[in-house]
Length: 579
Image (cartoon, rainbow, N blue to C red):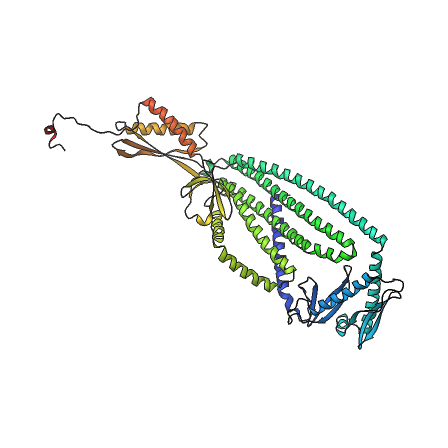
């Protein structure tokens, strides 16, 4: 598959995801307008799932982790500030009654669950011929029959059969043989957890080794292909086309390594999250095996599973976007070999741009993940937007400097003021830009110090290595030296260096300006400017000084020395009137 085809596929995927997001937002905004009878679910303070239809709320009655049927009551949740809603209190009461029957014990062969009339209300009762006296389980109301679209008698008969079957099944699960089977199943789950954990840890170790290998390859590739730019030329026919193509090929290799690193990080995160989810699922499965803790087993996995689904979805989308950005940056760099005169600069900027885009995408993914999780927990969309606005206002007030860092960092990166690999001067600090994010820039000084500068502190920064550099060389020679001879000698040395195979690729213009810049009592100051490639000015200046010293000695040219006239007189009268 060609690069253009992959780019088209990435475009289609991103457009499809954006379309799905827009459709989802439209659907979410349209839901409340479907009418008052629309079922709106929400979570109670105790975690029970409650549904509301008009002025009626209903919830499920559970036994041993299984939902038996649904009961209903008038919705007073909005008007009464109590911990439990009426329907939830009723469901809890029914569940306690069923558990009391099971814990008290009964004879399954003589158990009778039937309907009865109590105070002109239809109730469901249970009894047996030995240990269990008649006990009222629940009252079947008109509201229950209303949501079931049946009569009270028909609904009561159906619930009688459900309760009879559920109680007998609960009794059977608590007998010695099923208990031994439950213990055996829990033991197998524990052994499976240990084995799968070992496999996951072994896989993570392999991924870490692969990650370290890719990091070494990326570093060696970056060191080998450190771009050195030159100022733009008017005649593009003189540019080294083969060198540009080689730089483009090297960058493609570096981009492929970055893509592999991105996928490796994704797999490492999947392995770690999978291991955590595995233990949550294992503990939930062990709890689910035993009927007494089956409901807790479902509850313990619900929130971690929701978090994992949200994380998996957003991580997959963000990594696809990162790969798309990586692909677009690679195309942008390769276009520089044909349409731009700053190919090397694009190669230098691409890793920094990729890192900044990753930070932006990660921030958006985390923000969306929090909103989706809160919405999943039952909070309304309007409440989330209002809360997000308030939190944003508070964060803006509390983290003003951090926001300034991000804004200045964004402008520094996208205006190409400097990037990783440049040498900059900020106030009294000079160093190589070693690391850069939206918040801060890290400089490595000559003595090895790592200097971290927050972006809100950077007002003026001097880039000493962008595109090209210049050697401003000055030297003071003796006053009696012939200026034309000294200037010609200095220019000849620069020309010879430009012709030397060791230095010719680094020198762009050996003599840009040459002449006498100052005359004083100490001598003549001669200035020479040499245009060189970025980051090469210091090496070239040191070599030029060495060659110039040797040439001056051969030609008998001396360095300027301060000169003074000293007059010695025998008496003071001899110099009267001269000063």
